[in-house]
Image 1 (cartoon, rainbow, N blue to C red):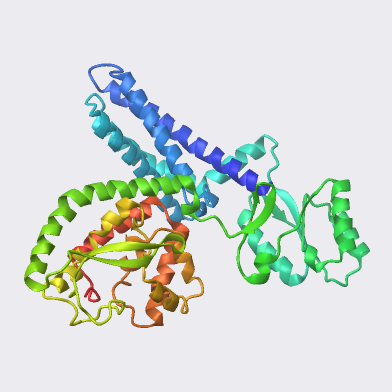
Image 2: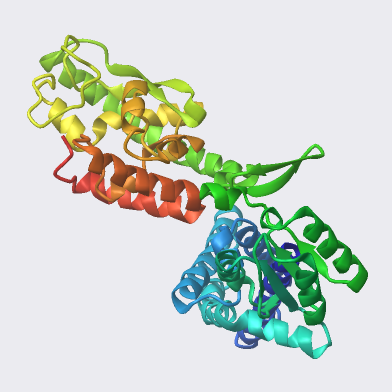
Length: 459
């Protein structure tokens, strides 16, 4: 019920923002054409731009991370700024793609740049205060959005639920809870609820006798208020679960991750293919010749080093790297260290500037890896590392990457102790839970900087 209202309000809010940007588009179009020699020149091209604008805003709203969705229209200034920047960049990117495909010279470039720039303060203001304006408009028409919400349970349980529902204060008007225990008489609880006349009753069924639960549900049917019975498994085990319907079977599942959605996976795959197509022909292929020459003089043998690594969902795949060590060495599973005797002359340079990693773009093209994601490890290392972080295995929910948030933040190269494992896992798990295309693009740009100025651990 409340989740549906939240979705409805979110889509209404996005539609309102789109309508305001369309009005700004119309105003800028008229001003632009007024100062041009031809009145309303090339209207067909501008109609195409309007369609691109709506598509860009729709795609941004559809791919927006869940945290931004919940805060839409009531975000703190920092989040509102980030979201406004994201929306303006989507507009600018949409216009850029349109011009690259059509090469239309009849459209004012200042118009196309000015619209996203002028839209930014509009996005910022509505992202901060838009929900209040929208709810005020609804309330002015007699649409009662808030529900008088009553909690029934132990003091600790009521305090926890009250804190959780505080995030939905636009929909829940909290009233003083009915505090009770398993030994509280049913008559006292039912009479207390009946006297308060809530719109929504939330109670802990596992803490109340079955008779009390049945009487509360019957009272709700009779008095016309809604009843919620929270699923307590999450609270008992300290984890969050969501209720989903699978072919008529209701199951508790962990929260849906961004890359569990088919649309997001398609966007990420398109990004991977585009980057691989840009990198492989002009960079990877010439590097094959350069590395082959270095190997002929320093350590003859195969050009590539192949090794089994753990990929998405624990599936093993064969990773490709330019060989940077001698063919015969004592232990291929041992991590490389500073001054490692197994590295041939010139191989240290390949490793320091990550040249040895470039063949993994072929793995990306095959679909085994992604450009951005947690780095893949050997199965033996995975078994060892997972001892140091209780959520370490969650890294395998997405494809491994050539680079990732952990590497950009300095956690690359040799893992010396448990602190390194926990630091790398912490950043990888943040990436898994908060993926968006903008994050991939930012990390790709930051990685380019790291290649130019490699950290001390690059050996």
